Amino acid sequence: MSPAALLRLARPKQWVKNVLVFAAPGAAGVLDEGGALLDAVLAFVAFCLAAAGTYFLNDARDVEPDRRHPTKRHRPVAAGEVPVAVAVAVGVVLLVAAVGLGFAVRWPLAATVAGYVALTTAYSTWLKQV
Image (tube, rainbow, N blue to C red; front, side, top):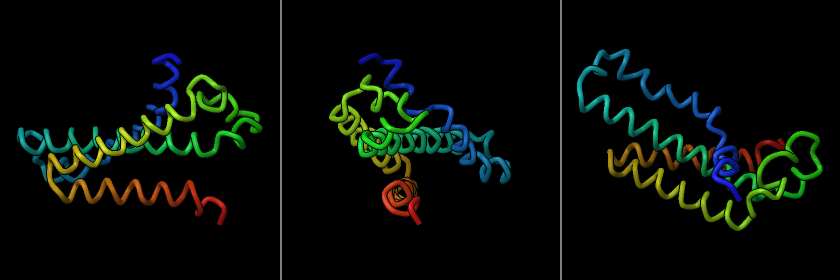
């Protein structure tokens, strides 16, 4: 198992959407204030950790269908580059770190990150079949 496989599993290309956390403080004109900028950067990191954690858990859960899929079979877990148990363990650590970082900033951020995790998990588990 290589660090490159773990990084691919985290899907950093998908993290671009997390720059939206800079929109509100940017629109308010407070990003040049140290505290607001730091909070926004930490929120960005928390959402990146949460996104990566959900990808790890989703790919561990969907390993068998992914192995039969023409493109998803190349994902690190489906391809056997990252063991399922490692994907689950790292995914849980990433999610705990994301919510923990949220609490370190402010409890509403932790609640928002936890809500994001709940929604993405609901989508991966049930809603994508609806």
